Image (cartoon, rainbow, N blue to C red; front, top):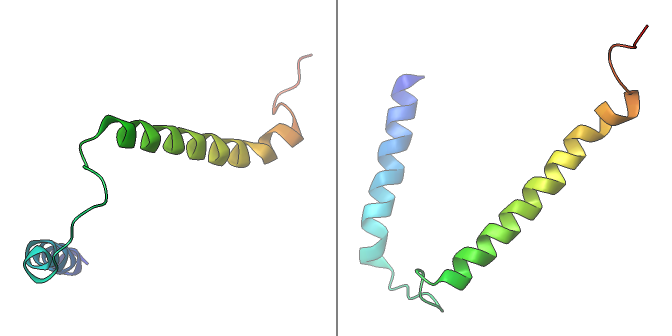
Amino acid sequence: LPLTAVAGTALVWLAGWVSPMLVDYTPLWPMDSWPLALGAAVVGLALAGVVARWLAGPLQEKGPLVKAA
């Protein structure tokens, strides 16, 4: 298993190193722009909230685990 992880990491690193030489990619907007970072943060927080609410759903339906005496 550790050798597989090392080989996979090496292949991903190699692909990231070689791909810019093979593909001429120019993003549509500057990647260091603050509106892009702000938009990514808002989308990430919204997605995290949806996932947290979805995961907490079954716990909220059952009620408290310990009932007060």
